[in-house]
Image 1 (cartoon, rainbow, N blue to C red):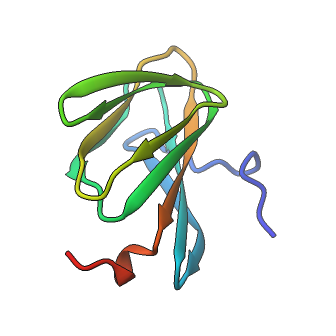
Image 2: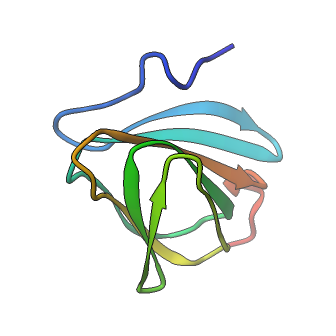
Image 3: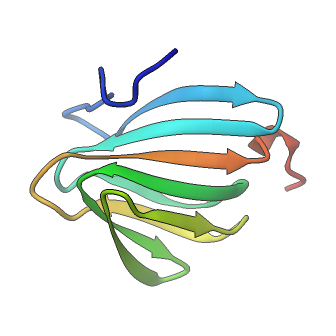
Length: 107
């Protein structure tokens, strides 16, 4: 068992991350961003849902910026161009829920 509020993987130099679940049909990652840190732009490699646990972020999907705060859940379609920036003055952490596991996706 893991607790997403204990030992949150913040890193002073870059975005922090840890894998929570890696199963055939599901991959769950936790991302931790200090103020100003970001997840670099990339294409979603599966169907994704972002669940904000703490803080506030700006999620950019195909060029459109969407603000998200604690408690928000945001769907991201497969192959969507995305980036995520901690826009707040506090740390931010969120879950990246991928279904199916990217290893099952036909790229």
